[in-house]
Image (cartoon, rainbow, N blue to C red):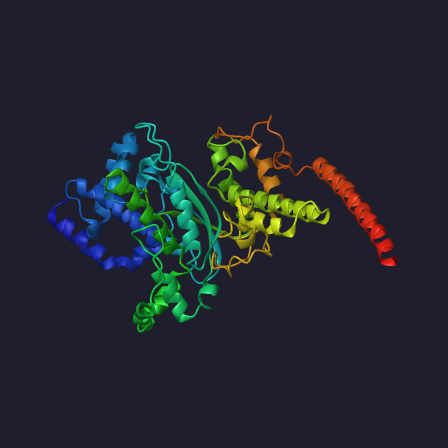
Length: 461
């Protein structure tokens, strides 16, 4: 035990030292960690001090107690995490001092364009968007909530949705903020976009009236803040997570957290990291054992793009078939138009109006994919993010999916045929189709020559 006079002298010496000396010796973060963790232990020592009363005498006592408690480091570290908020703390040695995770503003640059991998998990990693192993309830329909909400938000925010994967207990998104596009929006358009959003319901609000827009336009600072929010990924995730959590809690008649945290994020600085992260996100259902192939991995960006590609190819083949039959006289032009309007033409209507499943996501190829999604107000821009098209990306995805990964049970089976064959895009079939087209064009040429020969004698008569 130190006497009262010695403690007072130690306290005075510590006060004379000041914060500047501590900062110069340890740095802000390290000094804060040592101060909180050691002060907590010192408060348990007879004669100990609080955080602002730390001195050399307390340090000596803590070192003694450190030797006593060295056999129960895990338990002390757990207490320090709860009480001191420090993490693994002082007891693990100077080389393993746990530093706090970076703040989101240190990861995300809200002024410059950048791509980020954002992910969030359900509380306790429960299957709140799938089949509950305990109750047996199937809540897989909630995945469509997330996908539809992402599509709606992509039409409002100045943020590109590059890729996504909706799993049973977590959601992956790859987002790219576009503050450069947000600066180009007119003030009225900024307000109109923001008033479409709601934090309480999944659907977008109705279009605001001129009176509602004018009320917000009267406040210039408010408009400036709304313009910033439209390209802010944090606000994008708020508008994504909160309505889903609220609707799910109402449906389950529960209260409390639906998501375990706001969201975690990681910056993707270059094309290599973008490509690897996109492959990782699209392979999530396969690695989790929920699907065997990318086309079966519903609620992923790759599956949505693949379905639209198949729809466009089927529609293109159908149009060629109708054109050939019309030339051969097997079908009238009115039948073609009726086909476009009828049930068989639903696929054609989708192709004409836009990609039904993936039109709201950014294209893969950097130069774009020929679809004017930004003009249709379905996405922020038509700029892609990879130096390859969809076909090459799918082949690379297939190759990666066939590789086994340690710790992951899912893999594309070896018995599964290649993707080109599964999609009907193999070169053999293309060659057969080309030969069939040549034969049919030969029939067309013969018919045209025959009709020309029949008409010429009539003109002579």
